[in-house]
Image (cartoon, rainbow, N blue to C red; front, side, top):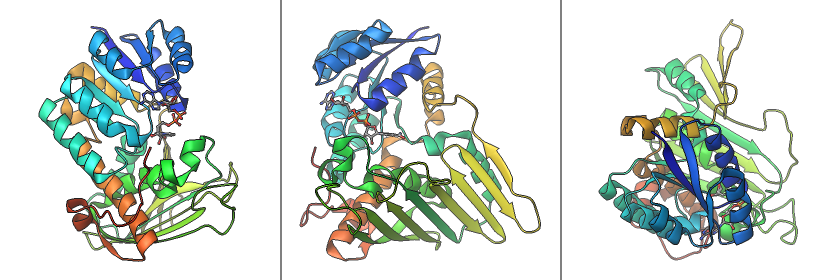
Amino acid sequence: MTISVAMVGAGRMGAKHVAALAAMDDVHIVGVADVRPEAATALADETGGEAFADYREMLERLKPDVAYFCTPPADHGEQLVFAAGLGINMFVEKPLASSMVDANAIVDAVERAGVLFTVGYQWRYNPTADVARETLGDLSATLLAGWWYWTIPPIPWIADRRYGGGQVFEQATHQIDLMRFLGGDIQEVYAVYAQNARPESELPNWDANAVTMRFASGAAGSLHTTYALFPGIPNGNAVDIIARELLIRAQSARCTVFRRDQEPVETKGPEGWTIDQPYMEAVRRNDPNLIRSPARDSAKSIAVSLAANYSAVTGKIVDVGAFMANPPTDVAIMPTG
Ligand SMILES: NC(=O)c1ccc[n+]([C@@H]2O[C@H](COP(=O)([O-])OP(=O)(O)OC[C@H]3O[C@@H](n4cnc5c(N)ncnc54)[C@H](O)[C@@H]3O)[C@@H](O)[C@H]2O)c1
């Protein structure tokens, strides 16, 4: 059986996923859509697929087995609900959506359609996350602490808080999602963001973000991130999971375990591994049990980021459950697209 895939969004991540999918013998890229027709044509030409300016026309005409969405999150609501209506399986790049209203509409639509749907949270899918989970076992984490030290994002809309939503929403969503995977749900969030290193003219965004979290398990959570630095800082991002006499340091494709009086034990993710592999395996087997980031769970990860943005803007401590049930509209905190 050949799996037909249509790509929506021919930018940086669209090209990356196409390269990974094209390397699979049983996958055929049948179409590429982008509002920039030249980008769609260039990527489609690499794969033998057809180029489209309108993703709806592509999905209706080609009826692919799978659609990938590598577009800005503010577009996801409309796009994913449309594809769910056609019964198409979907992979969407993180974050799921730019608002809880859109996220809830997506959850409803994909669950009703019963399609195989995943968000591209590759930290959670990487086999190193299994090592972290198995190492933690039945122990309760008492602290989950993450950091991401970076520079100005290379994609201009991502660098701009109005479209990218800030680093906690756009980038550190991977870490919040991994913290939830290993530590369970997050109940409460308090955040302080700053812009003291780069002027608005250089970076229209917060350049420092500090988030404090309370997990339902009772664990404390902490995340600090910055766009004030430069690329290439050694160990520039990680999540530390701390339990009694145990430190698990999880990075996107590496997990290091530290125990008293023992050498650290490092596990690296498989060479050449991409998240496309487990997702396409779920499609091949038509097995929803292989999906690690369904819409409903991923909505909880963006809720934490959006609640952090809300806390940073208002100075309030935010109850995440209440935020999800009744998303506040009094201040602008979300990327608008
Ligand atoms: N998983 C990861 O580690 C990772 C890393 C980087 C980016 N991302 C995510 O991937 C997504 C895409 O980011 P990117 O870096 O590829 O951005 P990008 O700007 O390079 O690509 C986005 C593409 O979408 C196209 N587009 C916009 N609206 C569209 C529409 N309505 N229909 C069709 N095409 C449309 C744009 O023209 C552009 O080509 C973002 O949500 C980002 O957060 C994920």
